[in-house]
Image (cartoon, rainbow over all chains, first blue to last red; front, side, top):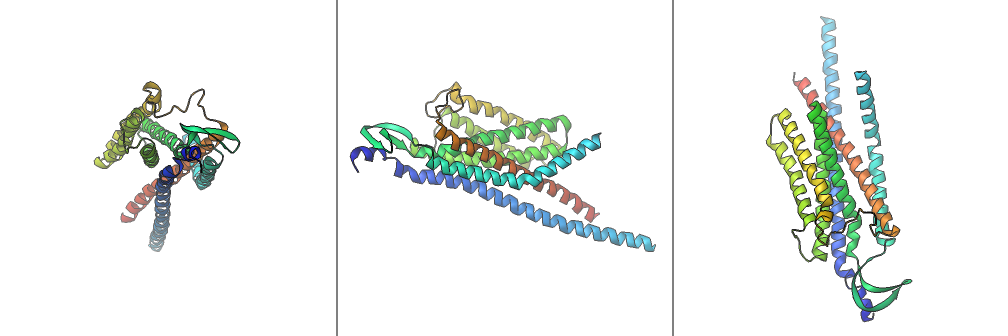
Length: 69
Length: 255
């Protein structure tokens, strides 16, 4: 490679780690947050389903008890 | 009428929740396209002049080619998205102060959370750019300083929320704080025009100097980031709403 081309491309390789790091950090921050949020959402939905089920059972038991009375 | 309006609002919210993963997916596709085009379609920006001219491709090049400028294609869209998220938080802060409805406080909190994520993304990408181009990890340049203050305010919002126990007082303070935080957004946006420092370019102007090959990846990344922020906001809001319902159910079970 001649000296002019060397000068033209002088900053490409030294800057590559910084460009890669910038994109990696950005995407990491976003992906970590999306994963955290999705896991939390799924867990809450599962808890919600369990709670609703237990409430239904309790309500049914109460209704049966009042019918018998 | 009020019942009808409430039902209409709920169904609109449910529709948004249904489409949130789709919007998130569209955002991912658009930003990926923007990323690819930033490295393939967009020509590298010229830096300092070199001691001669060389024919590269079909054009004569007499300057250094700056690869680090590729960070800009996501750094700027992410920064604009953080401004929008802070604006949304301030909007719900105003709505809460007007109505004192807890749902607006929740929306404001979720929007601030999204803003925090995007502020961190801006800081990460900005730091890398700064370290390579300016040779320092930090400098008290006007744009950086105002954005740093904005970041501290967003952190402060969550510290404030954690410090106040009473929900009503917490929501009121947080709403006022989110409005105060938003005051820094136009300052941060306009600072390059008010105090030109020479290092941070002014992008939004009548002649931004961006050629179509640079503008297309930038706009794709920006719309992609908007879609991602909206999709994440709706999913996080749904999670927060479910949390509230779950707490209510737990209380009913305890009774």
